[in-house]
Amino acid sequence: MPGYEDASSADMAAIPFALDDGDLAGVHARGMTIWRMQRAMRLGDRAFAGFVGVTAAKFVSIASVDPGGSSGQVAYYRWDEEDLADGQASASEARNWVIASVTLDPDEALDPQELDGKPDGEQRRTIAALLVAQGAAAAEYPEARWVAYTFREQVVAGGEPTGLRQTRVYMIGADDQSPDIEYTVHDPSKRKQPVEIVKSELQLAGDATSKLPLTTSAQSVGPSTVARAVAIATVTKKPVKIVDAAGGEWEVAPKTGELTKL
Image (cartoon, rainbow, N blue to C red; front, top):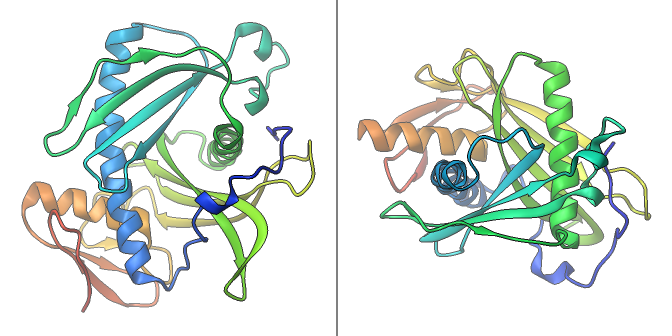
């Protein structure tokens, strides 16, 4: 598994507690963030393509949105060919490449900027988790395509942080045959250990991502399903219903993504 060397750092306080499945306000807020990340990613990818042109380089892209939701950025990281000679892309070998800043409402991309150097520790941790989630998803669904969105979290037990950290990776299907999957990836507890997937959950099957109502495989509505619902609701200007695996019914409003239990 791809890994990194610095398993601990002083920036723990900036990382939020892990999102609890029963935290409906948190699920709604994260779903809205993913929806904004999706918009940022589309803008960033267009700007990136115009800036870089056709490329055969191995790279990953990571979107982020500011707390106010009015702007964001997409960072692109690449690997040199010699670092891929062993057939594996390691987070420790990733290099900064391009950053594309965007504004939301209105949705516009600013001129991309090329970066040098190596990603910082938190960026490497995120890349390591993203790589292992992408690998697991591709192994299970080899014909599927995704766009991934990541969130760093503190691992919590009994309401208190444990000192461990994790990355939540939302693999959102890029076509109507690719499923939505959520992965929880733990950081290693010791240096040079690999990251570890501790949980994976199918949110929407590949043939359920574009059918209404959205019928999730999860016991309750999750952030990626909220993001998909609000995107559809905003385009159609109509609320979208979600049905969970427990039979619960939810409604997501256009634009605000307000989540209501029916």
